[in-house]
Image (cartoon, rainbow, N blue to C red):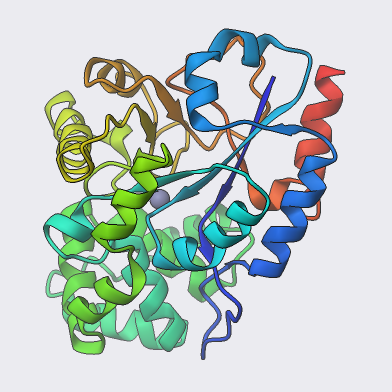
Length: 316
Ligand SMILES: [Zn+2]
């Protein structure tokens, strides 16, 4: 069987004026790698690719570590720890950060929200929105609170507006305008994402994967757009590194984001292993292009480690 653990931000200090960037510290990462070692055996991406059937059907718990979004801090903070423990991981990259030198939408939102309160962010959003799409009716406000029941009302309404009231294009346009008034995009791209030299080094180690071109949920796109998202980044990474990239991780990774025909197109475009965010252990019943994956918080020492314990109990 195969357990996959996924990571995003990794930094020593997550302090910002308004907490909205979450992840793990290098200390936690190292301790978690050691804790996972107690319950499994690390495999390399190449080993999984070559011995796929044997690994996934084995009673032994094999473990693969992955990172989404191509953040420079992953290379600087996590890779030295991986090297010291002799663990090879997969790092999934969006090519928009390199080809267009643009910051990914979700990172723009994280950065903006780390610097301003939710009411302030909402006010600016309304100011930039000339079509009144960010004004919610009482009924929509109620829907928002029900849908985002873990958040306070203001945050629920903001998330509802971004995710349900605005089209993807409107979200991109509005957030871009706001982002440009607060941040220098070039500077953020340089600071936040890996360099091409770092991508090449990871590829030479067999540790590089595709996270699509622009980090949109593929399942909502039409087949031509899905193909373009997968191929643009795959081609970019392969031409840059002169290595084949057979691994893909789907942005957001939810059932909707990975809905059919995403796995078929991923296969047709030359991918062999695909990773979702369906939290469970892989035991051989799943499509190789729809492998399940835990968030690191679901695994030993994580805030929600019961998720893994539960999945593990179901198997044993
Ligand atoms: Zn991502």
